[in-house]
Every structure is written in structure tokens, then in C-alpha cells.
Amino acid sequence: MSPVRTAPARLTAGDAALRAQYLDEVLRLLYPEPCTTSLPRGSSARASAPRGPAPENRSGKAPIVAEYIVVPDSRRPRLLVPTRSRRVAAAAVRRYAEPQSRIARLKRDAVVAVLRTPGAAGVLLRHRVRVCGPAGDTIDGYLRDALGADLAVSVHIGPARANRKPVLQLIAPDGETLGFAKLGTGPLTRRLVRAETTALTALSHVGLPDVTVPRVLNAGEWRGHQVLVQSALPVWLPRAPLPPDRLAAAMRAVAGCCGTSRSWLATSPYWNELRERLDEVADRPEGAALGAAARSLVERGGDVDLRYGAWHGDWAPWNMASLAGTLLIWDWERFTMGVPLGFDAVHYELQRRIQSTSDAEAAVEATLAAAPALLEPFGVTGAAARLTALLYLVDLAARYLADRQAEAGARLGVLGTWLLPVLVRRVEGLS
Image (cartoon, rainbow, N blue to C red; front, side, top):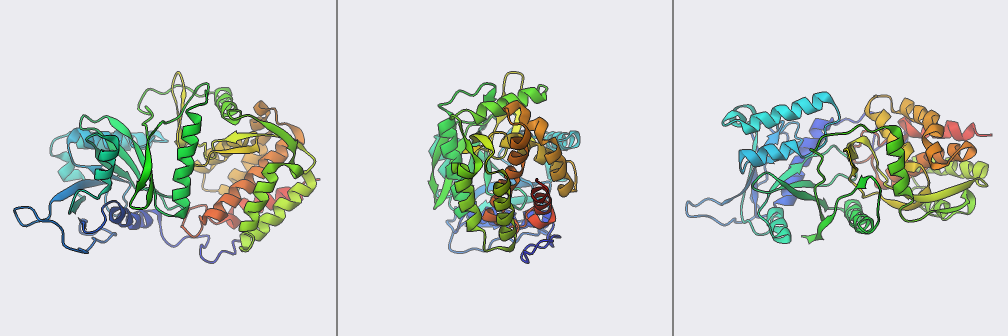
């Protein structure tokens, strides 16, 4: 159904191949010339060739700047684990992400056990990356100077997305996580890293009941790339149940943290801003269809009175952890003010459903069906609830198009295969 020829509904490159390609890109970025990188034989990524003379040590070889274990291997990389010590390597895996299933936790724990066992990693995790060259102008050197601390770097190799960026876990020699660093390397990701820096700075002055956000440890530039270093949230602590009312209360706290306003949709600053975003993608086939649906939605519901506040922008199960005394929430790069109340609740529900099914269109339909109950804790009911849920879909679709997620190979980048058909049907069905 999608008219975007650059991103067919069935992407030709699988997730593993795209990650392997990105592995090579990340290494070249973090360890620029004259550094050289050796990758294991059989890797889908290619080893970088020398692009200039590298300093030599007394043995006549360039010094080793960094060495990593590729987990699980270089054909389907997900994590680069520093080989500095067994303690550091185990910490890199144990704390780099929050497993979303029991099987994922078991796999993570198995890898941690291998890394802790003397000699086991050399047999079971055999793919290595070695970087040789000068140590001064690498990301490791920059971060050590910025934080004034000795540290090792672990590198997350994420799935293909337009907003994919290097995410680094910074680990002290004793295995403690010092923080996480994000690098904005292109126009979109630089903007997002700056936005998250601004959001975390603003939120540090706001009291959020039952919500904990990272602190900014350092913000700056390295070789033209935007850098944000933020504190590590203790995701490794024991979990606590997360009943729906507790989640909704936390979302309401974020929604009201910078104040709220009220107005009809058609005369609201939110619609003016959204209309500008839609105009920017109107020259694309899916953008034209999206814009038409949005205008029809406003024609039908422009006189509905809505309340507006802030939202996290990507509040999903994998961006949070529930502890006994607080909710840990990270990835604030999409934080925005002045949106209809309840966007976070609808987004969370959609992402939760998409995570558990291969039928994204059915997930959208189910989310819209659940929207009235999701929005009731925000005081959004009746026509306002239906309008808010559909506006969320418009907003999300505008983001996907502006970011060019389809061209980047994102799994759900082709809106015509899942989101747009549902949105158009629902808007046309409004009385």
C-alpha cells in the first residue's frame, strides 16, 4: 500500500545484516583515521584500511587503542564489550539494556556467566575487534577527559532507524556504570541529542512524583558530533509491580510538569505547529495522504475543547523500569510541551502491543479501541478521547515521515502498511 519506492513493505535487508553494516560505521566514527580496525574473518562488516601512518611502538606496531568482544558475533552484532577485565566485560552486558522477556534475561545472564569464567569467553565468544592507532583523538580519550575518570566504553549496536546513534556505556575499572553517552552524528541525531540535553536540564528543576530521570553529566561536541553524557539509572535493582493506576499517575505528573493550557483544537498552538510539520512532508505521497486525513480530522473535531501539556514522546516498556519507590524513565529526546493530554498513555499502549505482535495494523486498531479507558485518568473523555487518539496517530506519522524512517530501513517505517490505513478509515468514520 505504500507509495514510497525507496522503502518497500518487505525490506530486503534483514536486521542482522543492517546491524553488521552499522558496526563498521560506528567503529570508523568512534576511532577515526589514522586508527585502523581489524574485524574477525567471516564478518559481514569490512575491516577498515589504513588511511594514514599510525604511530608505532617499540615493536614496530601501532599501539592497541581498544579491543572488544562482539556479542553475540560479528554477523549479528548487538554489543561491543571491552576486554579490559572480566569484571568490566560482565558489567557491560549485565547493565547495558533492560531485557523485555524471560528468555532475553536468560540469554543475558548466560553471556554474563561466560564473561566471568576464566577462559570461557575465548572459546564461546570468539569474535573480536581490535583498534590500533593514536589514543588521543578517540571517543575514549574525549570521555575520560570530559569526566575526569578512568573508564572503558561498551558500544550498543541498535536496530536500523533514522534516529539510530552510537550509545555508549561508560564503565569504571571496578565494574560500576559511570553513565551513558549518546552521539549525534547527523542533522537528525544531533538535533535529538541537543533536545534531550535541554529536556534533562529542564526536568532537573521540576519535581516529578514517583519518576526518576537521568542527570546531565557532560554536554559538548567531539569532532563535530553532539555529545550528551547522562547518569546511569539503577535498572539492575529489584523490580516492583506496575499497576495501571501508578503508570497513569506518573504520566499525568509529566504531562503537568510545565503547566497546562486549554483551547479548541482548530485554534490551538498545537494544531498550528502540527500543520507546519505536515506541510514539510506534503511533497511526499504518504505525506499528502496524512495531511488530508489531518485536515479532515480538524474539520470534524476542531471545536472540541482539549487540554494540553507535556509528554515524554517515546514512553515505552523498554524506556522505563519500575522500582519500589520510583519509576526510572530514560530516553527523553522526544520530550515536547503543548500536546494534547494523554499522548504518552496512547503511545505506551501502541508500543506494548506492537512489541507482542507481528500485525502492526491490528495493534493500531486495538490501541484505538482501548483509548477511552487509557485517557480517562487524564480527564479526557467522549469526543475529546477519540480526537486525542487520532491526533496522536497523526503526530506519530508526521514524525516518521520527517525522520525518513522508511528510507533508513526501520521495520515500521512504511506507514502505508499499518498506520495510515487505520487512520484514514477512522477519520472517515467520524460523524
